[in-house]
Image (cartoon, rainbow, N blue to C red; front, side):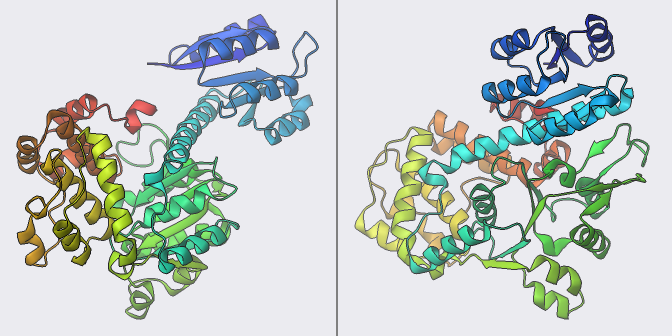
Length: 465
C-alpha cells in the first residue's frame, strides 16, 4: 500500500505541481483551506502532511499545525514556506513540525525529507507500541527483592539525564528491557528507541548499518539509506553486544560520542545527532581494555552511568512471582488453562539456577504450561533430566524447523502458532530484520521464510517503509 500524503495549500497550481512530482511514489490528496485539511486528517488518517505557512484565508499555518497536533500528535508535518518566512518555519519546528522546505525545493531533497519523516513516524509508532506494552504487568521489571529494588531505583535515576549508559550482565538477564525502561521513564519516551545487535551484523556491514550510506557509496548502493543513528534522531540508540565492535567501528563510535556527529558511508557532509547512547554487554569491558581488545577512551565514554543487571540466581526471592507470572502469561497467549503447580514442581523450579536467566525461565515455564494441557503442572512436565544434568533448559523457542515440528506435535494448534510466531520474531531480531540471513541460518529459502512471516502476521521493516 502506498503512503498517503496530504497537501494543505491554497495555491491550486502549486498543489497540482507537487502532486505530479510525488504521485508515482505516494497517494496524494489536497485541501485548499486549513479547515478542510483538518477534516481530511480525521477522515483519511494520512501518513504525512505538507502544510503551507500562509493560507489565503488569512489563517496562520502555525494555528493549523496546533490543530493537527490535537488530532494526531505523532503525524509528521513538513512546512512549505518561502524564504521570507524562514523564521516562522523555525518557530513551526519548535511546535512539532518535522522540517520545512521552500516553495521550489530540490526534488531529491524533498523526497529525502519525506522519507526521513516517514521513517521517524514508524519509529514513533513502535515506541508508542512499547509504551503500551510497558503498561501491561508482564512487561514491567518484576520482583521485589532488595536487589531488584536497587536496580529499579538506579533505572529511575539514570532516566533523569542524558548521559551515556553502560548496562552489564549475563545473557538473558534482560539488559534490553532495562534500556527500554530507562527510555520509557525519561523525557525522550515519545522519541524513537532504536536497537541494534552489534554481534549479529558482519563487520563489513556494521558501519553502513550504524551510519547509513549515500547512493553509489559501494556496489549495490542504488539509493541512500539512513543508518541507526539517523533513525534514532533525538531518541535513544541501544547498542547491544557492544564488546563485539572491531577497532575501526570503535574509533567511529568514539567520534560520535565526542563530536555528536557522523558521516554516512560515501558522504562528505557531517550529520549532527542528539541521540542518547545506551550500550550493553555480557563481557567485562575493563578486562578487554587491559587485554588490548577494547579502546580505553571508548570504554570511559560509555561507562559514564554504569548499571549491572543481576543474574536470576542472585535474586531467588523473586522466583515464585516470576514463575506464576510467566505461567499466567503463557496460559493467556496460548489459550491453555493454567491449573497451578504441584508442590514438588515448584520446589524443583526454585532450586534450579537458570544459567540462561530470565529468558530461560520464561521459555521453560511456557513449555511446561504447553505440555501440561490444562492439568496441574508437575515434575513430569519439567523435563527433569535436563535439570539433573545441570544443563541449560532446552529453549521453548527452537532454532531449527525439526524442533519446531516436534513442538507442533506436542501442542494445540493455537499454541503452535504462537510458538512459531515467537520463533520467527526471535530469528528476525537476531539478524536485525535481515530476512536473507535469517533464512540461511535455519536452512530454508528466503521465499519460504517470507511466507511464514506473512502467515504469522509479523510486521517487518519492508512492510513499514
